[in-house]
Image 1 (cartoon, one colour):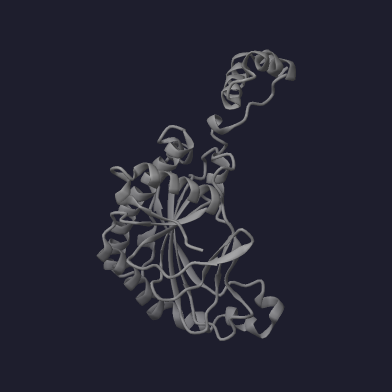
Image 2 (cartoon, one colour):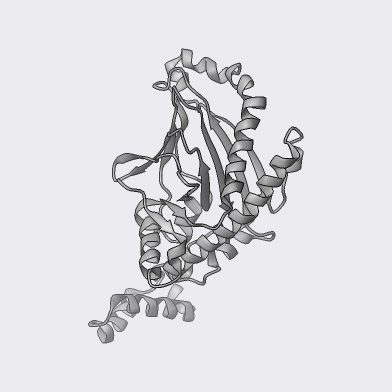
Length: 306
Protein backbone atom coordinates (compact mmCIF):
# COMPACT_ATOMS: atom_id res chain seq x y z
CA UNK A 1 0.00 0.00 0.00
CA UNK A 2 1.73 3.17 -1.23
CA UNK A 3 1.43 6.25 0.99
CA UNK A 4 0.33 9.30 -1.07
CA UNK A 5 3.18 11.65 -1.98
CA UNK A 6 2.43 15.32 -2.60
CA UNK A 7 5.01 17.03 -4.79
CA UNK A 8 4.96 20.75 -4.00
CA UNK A 9 6.69 21.51 -7.30
CA UNK A 10 3.60 20.25 -9.11
CA UNK A 11 1.36 22.82 -7.44
CA UNK A 12 2.48 25.19 -10.16
CA UNK A 13 1.61 24.47 -13.77
CA UNK A 14 -0.49 21.91 -15.58
CA UNK A 15 -0.34 19.25 -12.83
CA UNK A 16 -1.81 21.50 -10.14
CA UNK A 17 -5.36 20.13 -10.42
CA UNK A 18 -4.13 16.55 -10.22
CA UNK A 19 -1.91 17.35 -7.22
CA UNK A 20 -4.71 19.16 -5.38
CA UNK A 21 -7.02 16.20 -5.99
CA UNK A 22 -4.38 13.83 -4.60
CA UNK A 23 -3.99 15.98 -1.48
CA UNK A 24 -7.76 16.08 -0.97
CA UNK A 25 -8.01 12.30 -1.33
CA UNK A 26 -5.09 11.81 1.08
CA UNK A 27 -6.80 13.95 3.72
CA UNK A 28 -10.20 12.29 3.17
CA UNK A 29 -9.26 8.64 2.78
CA UNK A 30 -5.90 8.30 4.51
CA UNK A 31 -5.34 11.04 7.10
CA UNK A 32 -1.63 10.93 6.31
CA UNK A 33 0.72 11.56 3.40
CA UNK A 34 4.25 12.62 2.49
CA UNK A 35 5.40 15.87 0.91
CA UNK A 36 8.48 16.31 -1.24
CA UNK A 37 10.11 19.40 -2.73
CA UNK A 38 8.72 21.31 0.24
CA UNK A 39 11.39 24.00 0.11
CA UNK A 40 12.99 23.39 3.52
CA UNK A 41 16.78 23.44 3.47
CA UNK A 42 17.98 19.81 3.33
CA UNK A 43 21.23 20.52 5.18
CA UNK A 44 19.23 22.15 7.95
CA UNK A 45 17.05 19.04 8.29
CA UNK A 46 20.13 16.81 8.45
CA UNK A 47 21.60 19.02 11.17
CA UNK A 48 18.39 18.83 13.23
CA UNK A 49 18.56 15.04 13.14
CA UNK A 50 22.28 15.01 13.88
CA UNK A 51 22.01 17.36 16.86
CA UNK A 52 18.99 15.57 18.34
CA UNK A 53 20.60 12.15 18.01
CA UNK A 54 23.77 13.45 19.64
CA UNK A 55 21.82 15.11 22.44
CA UNK A 56 20.06 11.82 23.19
CA UNK A 57 23.28 9.81 23.18
CA UNK A 58 25.09 12.24 25.48
CA UNK A 59 22.27 13.25 27.85
CA UNK A 60 19.34 10.84 27.83
CA UNK A 61 20.35 7.34 26.79
CA UNK A 62 21.94 6.18 30.05
CA UNK A 63 19.14 7.61 32.18
CA UNK A 64 16.53 5.92 29.98
CA UNK A 65 18.01 2.45 30.40
CA UNK A 66 18.35 2.96 34.17
CA UNK A 67 14.78 4.27 34.54
CA UNK A 68 11.67 2.47 35.77
CA UNK A 69 10.47 2.14 32.16
CA UNK A 70 12.90 -0.69 31.51
CA UNK A 71 11.56 -2.62 34.51
CA UNK A 72 8.13 -3.01 32.90
CA UNK A 73 9.55 -5.65 30.58
CA UNK A 74 9.54 -7.96 33.58
CA UNK A 75 5.73 -7.83 33.68
CA UNK A 76 3.69 -8.36 30.50
CA UNK A 77 0.61 -6.52 31.78
CA UNK A 78 2.56 -3.42 32.84
CA UNK A 79 4.44 -3.41 29.53
CA UNK A 80 1.18 -3.24 27.60
CA UNK A 81 0.40 0.11 29.27
CA UNK A 82 3.83 1.69 28.78
CA UNK A 83 5.48 3.58 25.93
CA UNK A 84 9.08 2.61 25.16
CA UNK A 85 10.26 6.13 24.37
CA UNK A 86 12.51 8.90 25.60
CA UNK A 87 11.02 12.29 24.72
CA UNK A 88 10.80 16.00 25.47
CA UNK A 89 8.70 18.88 24.13
CA UNK A 90 9.83 22.28 22.83
CA UNK A 91 7.41 25.20 22.42
CA UNK A 92 7.97 27.61 19.53
CA UNK A 93 4.79 29.71 19.17
CA UNK A 94 3.33 31.87 20.52
CA UNK A 95 6.33 31.89 22.90
CA UNK A 96 9.47 29.79 22.64
CA UNK A 97 10.90 27.92 25.62
CA UNK A 98 13.98 26.54 23.86
CA UNK A 99 16.33 28.69 25.95
CA UNK A 100 15.03 26.96 29.07
CA UNK A 101 16.84 23.81 27.95
CA UNK A 102 20.12 24.85 29.52
CA UNK A 103 21.96 21.74 28.33
CA UNK A 104 21.12 22.44 24.67
CA UNK A 105 24.20 23.58 22.72
CA UNK A 106 23.78 27.04 21.21
CA UNK A 107 24.09 25.65 17.70
CA UNK A 108 21.24 23.19 18.33
CA UNK A 109 18.96 26.06 19.39
CA UNK A 110 19.84 28.17 16.35
CA UNK A 111 19.40 25.23 14.00
CA UNK A 112 16.06 24.27 15.50
CA UNK A 113 14.75 27.85 15.33
CA UNK A 114 15.75 28.14 11.66
CA UNK A 115 14.12 24.80 10.85
CA UNK A 116 10.88 25.73 12.61
CA UNK A 117 10.68 29.10 10.82
CA UNK A 118 10.79 27.27 7.49
CA UNK A 119 8.48 24.48 8.65
CA UNK A 120 5.76 26.90 9.78
CA UNK A 121 5.64 28.28 6.24
CA UNK A 122 5.03 24.73 4.98
CA UNK A 123 2.28 24.20 7.57
CA UNK A 124 0.59 27.46 6.58
CA UNK A 125 0.80 26.56 2.90
CA UNK A 126 -0.72 23.15 3.62
CA UNK A 127 -3.53 24.77 5.60
CA UNK A 128 -4.31 27.09 2.67
CA UNK A 129 -4.33 24.18 0.21
CA UNK A 130 -6.65 22.22 2.49
CA UNK A 131 -8.97 25.21 2.76
CA UNK A 132 -9.04 25.53 -1.03
CA UNK A 133 -9.96 21.86 -1.35
CA UNK A 134 -12.67 22.20 1.29
CA UNK A 135 -14.16 25.26 -0.38
CA UNK A 136 -13.61 27.69 2.49
CA UNK A 137 -11.56 30.90 2.72
CA UNK A 138 -7.87 30.11 2.32
CA UNK A 139 -6.99 31.41 5.80
CA UNK A 140 -9.94 29.74 7.54
CA UNK A 141 -7.85 27.09 9.33
CA UNK A 142 -5.21 29.58 10.43
CA UNK A 143 -7.86 31.95 11.79
CA UNK A 144 -9.67 29.07 13.52
CA UNK A 145 -6.42 28.07 15.20
CA UNK A 146 -5.35 31.59 16.17
CA UNK A 147 -7.22 32.58 19.33
CA UNK A 148 -5.62 35.74 20.76
CA UNK A 149 -2.00 34.94 19.98
CA UNK A 150 -1.96 32.95 16.73
CA UNK A 151 -1.66 29.19 16.21
CA UNK A 152 0.28 27.13 18.73
CA UNK A 153 3.42 25.41 17.44
CA UNK A 154 5.51 22.89 19.36
CA UNK A 155 7.80 19.93 18.69
CA UNK A 156 7.95 16.56 20.38
CA UNK A 157 11.42 15.09 20.01
CA UNK A 158 11.39 11.35 20.69
CA UNK A 159 13.82 8.49 20.55
CA UNK A 160 12.54 4.93 20.50
CA UNK A 161 15.56 3.07 21.88
CA UNK A 162 16.60 -0.47 21.08
CA UNK A 163 14.30 -2.77 23.04
CA UNK A 164 15.33 -6.26 24.21
CA UNK A 165 11.70 -7.50 24.20
CA UNK A 166 9.83 -5.59 21.47
CA UNK A 167 7.03 -8.15 21.45
CA UNK A 168 5.94 -6.96 24.93
CA UNK A 169 5.78 -3.20 24.52
CA UNK A 170 4.93 -0.46 22.03
CA UNK A 171 7.27 2.39 21.29
CA UNK A 172 4.10 4.50 21.43
CA UNK A 173 0.62 3.06 21.92
CA UNK A 174 -2.24 3.44 19.44
CA UNK A 175 -3.71 6.96 19.38
CA UNK A 176 -4.90 9.83 17.24
CA UNK A 177 -3.33 13.28 17.55
CA UNK A 178 -5.35 15.92 19.38
CA UNK A 179 -4.28 18.90 17.30
CA UNK A 180 -4.24 20.13 13.72
CA UNK A 181 -1.45 19.50 11.20
CA UNK A 182 1.47 17.32 12.31
CA UNK A 183 4.71 17.52 10.33
CA UNK A 184 7.18 14.75 11.03
CA UNK A 185 10.90 14.71 10.35
CA UNK A 186 11.65 11.07 11.01
CA UNK A 187 14.50 8.62 10.98
CA UNK A 188 15.98 7.73 7.61
CA UNK A 189 17.17 4.29 8.74
CA UNK A 190 14.99 2.73 11.45
CA UNK A 191 11.29 1.91 10.81
CA UNK A 192 8.52 1.57 13.37
CA UNK A 193 5.73 4.05 12.56
CA UNK A 194 2.42 2.46 11.54
CA UNK A 195 -0.95 3.95 10.53
CA UNK A 196 -4.32 2.19 10.52
CA UNK A 197 -6.20 2.13 7.23
CA UNK A 198 -8.99 -0.08 5.91
CA UNK A 199 -8.67 -2.55 8.77
CA UNK A 200 -4.90 -2.97 8.41
CA UNK A 201 -1.77 -1.46 9.89
CA UNK A 202 0.29 0.29 7.19
CA UNK A 203 4.04 0.30 7.85
CA UNK A 204 5.54 3.73 7.16
CA UNK A 205 9.10 3.31 5.83
CA UNK A 206 11.95 5.54 7.01
CA UNK A 207 11.95 8.90 5.22
CA UNK A 208 14.35 9.17 2.31
CA UNK A 209 15.65 12.46 0.87
CA UNK A 210 14.17 14.32 3.84
CA UNK A 211 10.57 14.06 2.75
CA UNK A 212 8.19 15.29 5.46
CA UNK A 213 5.51 12.94 6.71
CA UNK A 214 2.21 14.68 7.52
CA UNK A 215 -0.87 13.55 9.37
CA UNK A 216 -4.07 15.35 10.27
CA UNK A 217 -5.28 15.61 13.87
CA UNK A 218 -8.63 15.64 15.65
CA UNK A 219 -9.21 19.39 15.24
CA UNK A 220 -8.99 19.22 11.45
CA UNK A 221 -11.53 16.40 11.47
CA UNK A 222 -13.85 18.65 13.49
CA UNK A 223 -13.28 21.80 11.41
CA UNK A 224 -13.85 19.85 8.18
CA UNK A 225 -17.05 18.35 9.62
CA UNK A 226 -15.58 14.87 9.24
CA UNK A 227 -14.34 15.21 5.67
CA UNK A 228 -10.69 15.00 6.73
CA UNK A 229 -9.68 12.15 9.01
CA UNK A 230 -7.65 11.91 12.17
CA UNK A 231 -6.13 8.46 11.84
CA UNK A 232 -5.06 5.94 14.48
CA UNK A 233 -1.31 5.33 14.54
CA UNK A 234 1.40 3.81 16.69
CA UNK A 235 5.16 3.20 16.93
CA UNK A 236 6.51 -0.33 17.22
CA UNK A 237 9.53 -1.05 19.41
CA UNK A 238 12.60 -2.40 17.65
CA UNK A 239 15.29 -4.74 18.91
CA UNK A 240 18.04 -3.61 16.54
CA UNK A 241 17.52 0.10 15.93
CA UNK A 242 16.97 3.33 17.84
CA UNK A 243 14.46 5.47 15.91
CA UNK A 244 14.36 9.28 15.91
CA UNK A 245 11.11 11.25 15.58
CA UNK A 246 10.92 15.06 15.39
CA UNK A 247 7.18 15.78 15.23
CA UNK A 248 6.06 19.40 14.98
CA UNK A 249 2.45 20.24 15.80
CA UNK A 250 0.70 23.16 14.08
CA UNK A 251 -2.20 23.38 16.50
CA UNK A 252 -4.97 25.69 17.70
CA UNK A 253 -4.01 28.01 20.53
CA UNK A 254 -5.35 27.00 23.91
CA UNK A 255 -8.09 29.65 23.80
CA UNK A 256 -9.19 28.96 20.21
CA UNK A 257 -12.88 28.06 19.85
CA UNK A 258 -13.16 25.10 17.50
CA UNK A 259 -16.26 24.16 15.51
CA UNK A 260 -17.06 22.86 12.01
CA UNK A 261 -16.78 25.42 9.23
CA UNK A 262 -20.36 26.63 8.59
CA UNK A 263 -19.92 26.12 4.83
CA UNK A 264 -19.34 22.41 5.45
CA UNK A 265 -22.40 21.80 7.62
CA UNK A 266 -25.68 20.38 6.45
CA UNK A 267 -28.66 22.68 7.00
CA UNK A 268 -30.25 22.13 10.40
CA UNK A 269 -33.01 23.40 12.70
CA UNK A 270 -35.59 23.84 9.96
CA UNK A 271 -39.20 22.68 9.60
CA UNK A 272 -39.73 19.86 7.17
CA UNK A 273 -42.66 21.71 5.61
CA UNK A 274 -40.28 24.54 4.66
CA UNK A 275 -37.95 22.05 3.01
CA UNK A 276 -40.86 20.54 1.08
CA UNK A 277 -41.89 24.00 -0.13
CA UNK A 278 -38.38 24.54 -1.55
CA UNK A 279 -38.28 20.98 -2.88
CA UNK A 280 -41.47 21.54 -4.89
CA UNK A 281 -39.71 24.13 -7.04
CA UNK A 282 -36.24 22.53 -7.12
CA UNK A 283 -36.97 18.78 -7.27
CA UNK A 284 -34.98 18.30 -10.46
CA UNK A 285 -32.05 20.49 -9.42
CA UNK A 286 -28.85 19.55 -7.62
CA UNK A 287 -29.69 18.67 -4.00
CA UNK A 288 -26.55 20.44 -2.76
CA UNK A 289 -27.85 23.75 -4.11
CA UNK A 290 -31.06 23.03 -2.23
CA UNK A 291 -29.09 22.38 0.98
CA UNK A 292 -27.23 25.67 0.58
CA UNK A 293 -30.51 27.48 0.04
CA UNK A 294 -31.94 25.94 3.21
CA UNK A 295 -28.92 27.06 5.22
CA UNK A 296 -29.42 30.63 4.05
CA UNK A 297 -33.14 30.43 4.82
CA UNK A 298 -32.51 29.16 8.34
CA UNK A 299 -29.89 31.82 8.98
CA UNK A 300 -32.14 34.55 7.64
CA UNK A 301 -35.38 33.59 9.40
CA UNK A 302 -34.94 33.03 13.12
CA UNK A 303 -38.61 32.02 13.49
CA UNK A 304 -37.71 28.70 11.86
CA UNK A 305 -35.64 27.88 14.94
CA UNK A 306 -38.57 28.28 17.34
